[in-house]
Image (cartoon, rainbow, N blue to C red; front, top):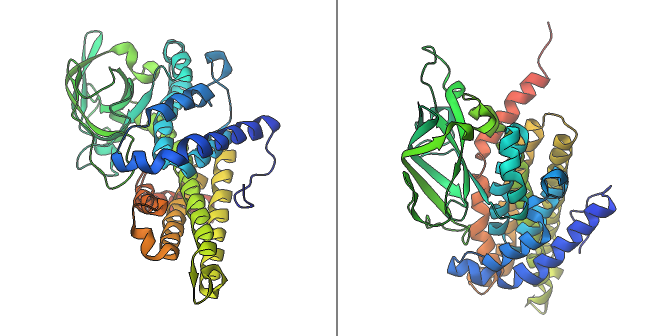
Length: 401
C-alpha cells in the first residue's frame, strides 16, 4: 500500500474493514477484472464474495442485520473496489442508494420488510430516475402513476438502470399529479415507488419488462438497462414513505450520497492508473535508461500523484460532512466534479506513459481508459455539479445590505 490517498483518524474497525476489502480486491478482483470486462460478463463470484464480507449491508444499521458503518467507511471501501474494477463498485452503489432511501424516508413497515434481506444481499436494489430524452431535467419526468383503489398503475419508459436486470427491488420515480392544483411545480408531483420484480430480462412481472443490457463503451459486466412499465400495478403501501409528492426530495437525497460514491470511484480508478503508470515507467527503457528517469515522465507522475491526493481529500471531506449530519451538496458536488475530471486526466497520462502498449487490450490501462468517461456523466454531469456548487456558493456568500 503506497503513501497516497491515506485517511487519518480511522478507527481500528474501519482499518480492519478496509484491509479486508483491499485483500479481497487484490486476490479476487484485479486478477480477473480485465478478462471479465472484455467478455462483458457479470461478476457472479465476486458479488457472492462481497455478500460474504457483509458489504451489501455496510451502512444498514445493526438492528436490521447490517454493519452500521458510516458513509466515510463506505466511500473508502468503494474507492478500494473501484481500484480493482469500477463496475463492481457500481453493483454495490445502486443497492446502497436504495437501502439509504429506505432508511431515511421509508415507513417502518418498508424498512422492516426490505432492509434485513438487503443487508445479506438476498434483496438487491436498483433505482430509476432517467428517461429517454430526459437528460438532467428530472422534473420533466413523464412516467406516470395513477391511483386505482389500493394500487397505483405505472406506465412509461425508464433508462440507464444500473443493476436493472440483476436487481429484485427497484426504486422508480414517477409522476403522480392527479388532483394537484393547476400550476403545481413539476418536482412536487413526483413519487418514488418500490417495485419488486424477479431478476432477469424480458417480462419479469406483468406490466414490467427489462428489454436487455445496453451495449456500452465501458463500465461492462454490470447490467445497464431500460425499464418498460405498461400498466404495472404496485400496491399503495409501496409508495416510499407512504406519501406521494415527496419523490424528488427523496431521490435528490439519495443522489447526494451517490455523488460521494462516484467521487470515491474516481479516486479508486485514478489510484490504479497511477500505480500502473509508475510501475511501467520503471520497467520500460528508452535511450539506455528507464523512462521514469526522464524528467518529462517524472513531471507527469508528480501531476498524477497530486491529483490523486487532492481528489481523495475532497471526497473524504464530503463523506465526513454528511456523517456529521450537515448538508453536503456543496462538498459532494465539488468532490464528484474534481474526482471525475482528475480521474480522466490521470488515466490519460498513464495511458500516454504506456505508449503504444496502452492501446493494447493486454494492458489494464486500456480498460481504465474506457471506464473513466462514465464518471463524467454518472450521478450528474460536470456541468450539473458546477451549477449546484455555484448556486450554493452564492447562498453562502450572499451580499448583505
